[in-house]
Every structure is written in structure tokens, then in C-alpha cells.
Image (tube, rainbow, N blue to C red; front, side, top):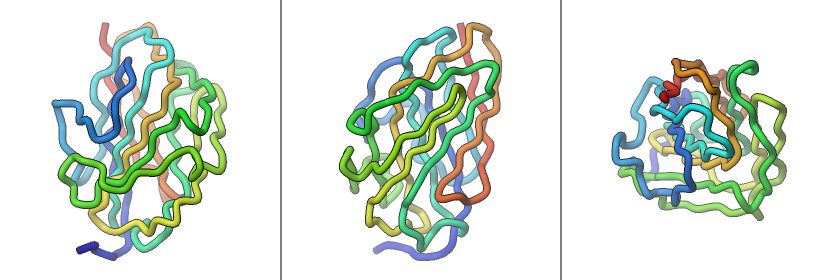
Length: 170
């Protein structure tokens, strides 16, 4: 049964250097409940796949899923463009770590990038519900050479951004 309320977006952004299958899990963390966190990422990775998990709460529940945006520190990360069909999209409707609702390139109306962020515009027809976990894989992020912890902002449907951190290791 789907829960309907309004939501704040909570994010777990998992950086990996290879392509993951949506719902494959990363072995370290399940879907986010609240707060924001990023899993460690390798330093100096080129074209790394970024997996974004966003738990839906009060600020976006009841809305159609229309967009997701991720903004990295502009002087540290580089975001390249990706074809619509190379972006993986889904929703884990029961927070079990598996994606039940999947969307493909036909649901993507636009992928916009600049040097440090990406925004994916969607036409999913899917109404977000409190407790849903949005899962997006973006395949074209270059990580910095310098190890350290970096702040990242994630926004769903123009709601207030949620800040998260990623630790880039050697």
C-alpha cells in the first residue's frame, strides 16, 4: 500500500566507478530513511557512474516525479553529458533496496549539464509517495584528484535541495 503525504527529500548518493544495475545494491547501505550521506568514491575517476537514492517525504510526496538535479563543487568535479538511454531511473516503493518501478529513456524529456551539475527532466506519470526511494544512475561524472570530503546538493521536483557529502579516496 502506498503512503501519500508531502515530503522532504533525503539523499544517499553512492559514487562508483563502474556501471551498476539499478537495484543491484552497493553492499554497504540500504535505502535512506532520513538525512543525507554519500558513499566513498575513488579519486580521479573518469566517467564514473553516480547512483543517487532519494527518500521521499513531505515536500514532494503526492507530486508527479518530474525532475532530479545534482550539484557538485564546481572547482572539483566535472559532469559530462549523457544520452537519455544511458541514464537509469527507478523507484523502490517499499524501501527494501530493490527497484519496483523502472523508467527508461522514453521517460526522460531532457538531460541538462554544466561543468559541475546535471538535471534530468522527466515525464514519468508516477506519483511520488512518502517512503518511496528514488534511484537514479548517471554515467558521466569525473571525480577530483584530491582525496577529501565534498558537499553535494540534490533537488527533486524543485523542492529545497538536500545537502550530502561524498568522501573521495585514493
